[in-house]
Amino acid sequence: MKTKTLRKNKVNVVTLGCSKNIFDSEVMMTQLKANNFEVEHESKEEDAEIVIINTCGFIDNAKQESIDMILSYADAKAEGRVDKVYVTGCLSERYREELQEEIPNVDAFFGTRELPRLLKTLKADYKKELIGERLITTPNHYAYFKIAEGCDRPCSFCAIPLMRGKHVSTPIEELVFNATQLAAQGAKELILIAQDLTYYGLDIYKERKLAELLEKLSDVEGIEWIRLHYAFPTGFPMDVLEVMKRKKNIANYIDIPLQHISDNMLKSMRRGTTMAKTNALIQEFRKAVPEMAIRTTLIAGYPGETEEDYQQMENWVKEMRFDRLGIFTYSHEENTHAFKLQDDVPEEVKHERANRIMEIQSAISFEMNQEKVGQTFKVLFDRAEGDYFIGRTEFDSPEVDNEVLVPKNQYVRIGDFACVKINRAEEFDLYGDLV
Image (cartoon, rainbow, N blue to C red; front, top):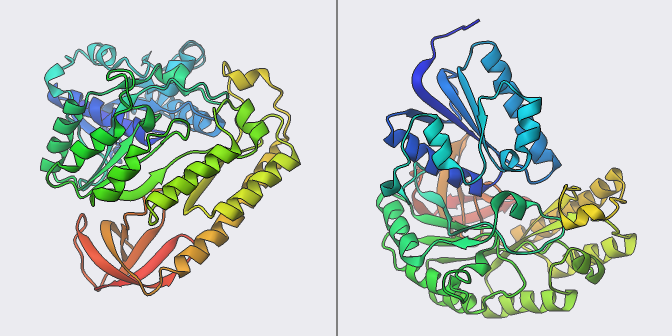
């Protein structure tokens, strides 16, 4: 039974998963608004007639979160609290038939590249003139900036090519135009995302063009930080480092998921590299841009990972002293190359290994942060929370990295830069005062 009046033509968009999904939701919301829909992102009002869930299908935990969200809104529809429920994104792309059978109360399922079909279902037009425009769901001063879709890499554990398709680069001139629009709307930071930034340009220009793209984006007036997420180590275009060093508004930061360091694991993972090549690349990064913060991601418990393989990774993490590090436990994904292998590392061992790595990284982060005490950093403030204004340095990305906390009695405006002298540090937080 309906408990409240639903607002006709109001759409609540719910986003799960990574920053690429956030980008896709923002594009979808722009199209809906242009078709005279009232649109909110993850609305707390619960008065929307229509709910669209943008799902993640990357690993088991993410899939379960998406399924739980779909079920909760399917129940809400059965109770009359919403009229229509639509599901899009990676989980829907990958498991559409199974989802349709198991959750029939959902009105329709759409894949990752079916926005025009979703709009048509809602009796809305896909407006090509809006390509590049987005309703930003992040704070206005930063935006995720997708430069390519899909992936051509053959990594054995990864289902992303099954869900996102082949790599497709967006032309440079289109990206510069989009960046100019975002800057006009108040964006000061662009966070470049793709399944693989370093492959950018190979499909349309027949050569890697990330460095040229960075050159042109760095000239967009109003953009003060450009941040690189999701670079691939094999075939990394070294001219990117030269541009990073020369251009002051390209953040000294890179997110480069390395996944493992044991040669046995790297070969089975089909990463196209070795321990020696990986270490040489990191040394090149630190030589070319000594102040660069390096974030990486690892996998614990990949099929066949022995205690010796794991120990090699643990020792390497201690030696490399990455600025930022995250680790996943291996998820055995259907239709990937690794699915043919036996998932032979017990779950408790996977979690134990991941926890040990994070304990080591926490200690490294604490030590590195102590070295920042007494130093002054340029900080971009994202939000106010509790007794603090909370921001980030150029060495930190939203949601995943260190934060800088300044007491509220030292007023700053959200979205502004300010200089902060650090007076105290914990594992993942820095405390300071405005200079």
